[in-house]
Image (cartoon, rainbow, N blue to C red):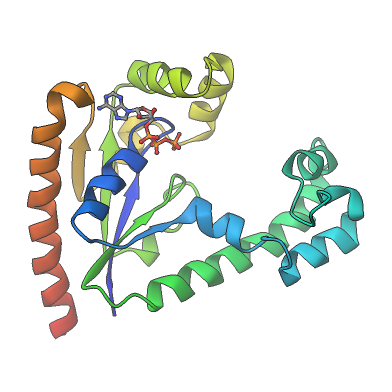
Length: 207
Ligand code: ATP
C-alpha cells in the first residue's frame, strides 16, 4: 500500500507550487479538486443523476456540467445543497480511496485544500502543511484571481485558521519568501522531505 502524505494549506498558500516540486522528483500527485471534477465528468453516471434531478439546464451544450448553473440551483437552497452533497461527498471519497489504492509508488502526495475541514486526515499517514502569512495569501491569491480580495477573505474565513492548521502538521513548508529568490531553498526542503517520506514509506510497508 502506498504511504499517503496529505498536502494542505489555505487558499493561495502554494500547495500546487509545492506539489509541482514533488512531481518533478517523480512523486505521484493525487489532487482532491481534480477528483471532485472527475466524478461528475461528461457522461458519468453521477452527472446523469444530477441532471435528472435539477433538469438539463445544468448541462452545457456538449453535455459537460455547467457549474455556474448548478451553483445557481443550490444557492440559498439548503435542501437542494444537502441533496447534492449527500450524493457527491461519498462518491468523491470513494474515488479518492480508489486512486490512492491504485498507487504503485512508495508514497504519494494527496493534495487536499480542505483536508482538515472535511475530516480527511485519517486517509493520510503524514500531513504536510504549506504555511504563509495571511496577508501573503490575500496578495498572491489576489494577483492570481484578478484581485477578488473580498471573496478571497471570505474563503479564508471558511477555512481553518493558520494556527489551527499548523496543529495538524507533521511537517511544515514555509512559503513566505518570494519564489524567484527562494526556489533553491524550497527545492532543497522538498528534497529533504522526499528522502524522509521514502524512509517512512519503507518502514510503513515493512509492517
Ligand atoms: P489554491 O488553494 O488557492 O488553489 P494553492 O495553495 O495551490 O492555491 P498556488 O496556486 O501554488 O497555491 O499559489 C498561489 C499563487 O501564488 C500562484 O499564482 C503561484 O504562482 C504564486 N506563488 C506560490 N508560491 C509563491 C512564492 N513563494 N512566491 C511568489 N508567488 C508564489
